[in-house]
Length: 106
Image (tube, rainbow, N blue to C red; front, top):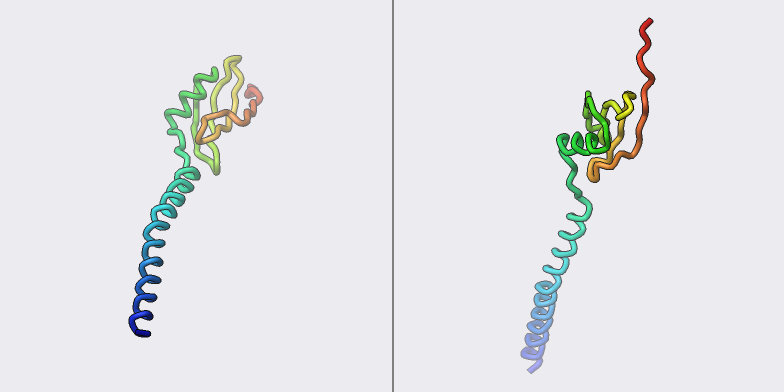
């Protein structure tokens, strides 16, 4: 009788552990997928960055570079000043603008 009780206990424990693993695995996989998609945002293409800069009123775009965690764009502002723009690669928002002095003809 003892042997059959031991076998029944082992079978029950194995079933519970296996069933728990089968239930927990999809939940853990879903949690992993959700966090991975939240951290990997899609960056804008160079064409989209140019469109954002033009929509902000800049023209004569000379250069678009991907530097560190941003795009750097050299363009001319609506009032004719040369500018260096720093844009967020995901939103396309202009985070910083540096205006350059006009070249001197010496």
